[in-house]
Amino acid sequence: MFNALVVNKNDEGKTSAAVSQIGLDDLPAGDVTVAVEYSTVNYKDGLCIGPGGGLVRNYPHVPGIDFAGTVEASDDDRYKAGDKVVLTGWRVGEAYWGGYSQKTRVKADWLVPLPDGLTTQQAMAVGTAGFTAMLAVMALEDHGIKDGPVLVTGAAGGVGSVATAILAKLGHEVAAVTGRPETADYLNGLGATQIVAREDINETTKRPLEAETWGGCVDAVGGEMLARLLGQMQYGASVSAVGLAGGAGLPATVIPFLLRGVNLLGIDSVMQPYDNRVRAWARIAQDLPMDRLEAMVQPATLSDLPQLGKDILKGAVKGRVVVDVNA
Image (cartoon, rainbow, N blue to C red; front, side, top):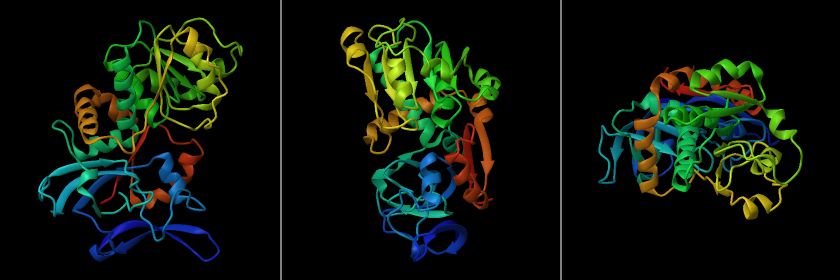
């Protein structure tokens, strides 16, 4: 038997989450059994833990949309007992049981070997948010980052924090957008050279084009903010859009795309091809400054998760929360 955070729903539709003992026979079918070491807390995890269950379709359910650990048993030749692995995406922790368990079982295709230079704890300090941030940076690079500051919105959150640190390590001037002035020192510590108040983006004029300011952008907010910043991009610059916290609507015109050649790049971390996942994790091991990574991390245990699920939905979590599932 081992510990897991299990979410249940009663006949009235109310959900509850508690640390429970389960066994290997309780785990879903899969090719590889992993002894989980670390997981993280993301916005989707908050939705799965919270009232109503959010993204969960079947109960009981074990959340945790990512994890890193050691292969315990494998029916797939690509992995053997003792291999270190990491998993992000594939709706693990939503449609399938996830990482908030000391053991889990998944399809081999969903896993990636842990790259040299990363521990399992560091991999989850990066987690889905950091993996997504690296995909966003790679997309900007593939389309060419222009001279001048690169904007990062939602910079104090998980994706924004890692994107800020990566871009700064790569030598770019980073302008970090935040609605929380108290995070300025934290963002400067990650390498941001300019702190931009959220209202300074949102309260600009609503003309379709403004002064060409940003050489690229990782946008982790979306909605009205994304619409506003499109008109501030330099000619031919790109925006990697990764979040919907500000809403799924885009109240913009086509003018930035037609007259400035702005590229809007959608980043989906859920079902990335294997080669791209390997490439992204290799880049993370190479380009993410580990000293700055440590400054982002808040430790947690399985018993902390019910409250943390509520906190992240309120926007009250800064940086990355790393869950030691064996603590």
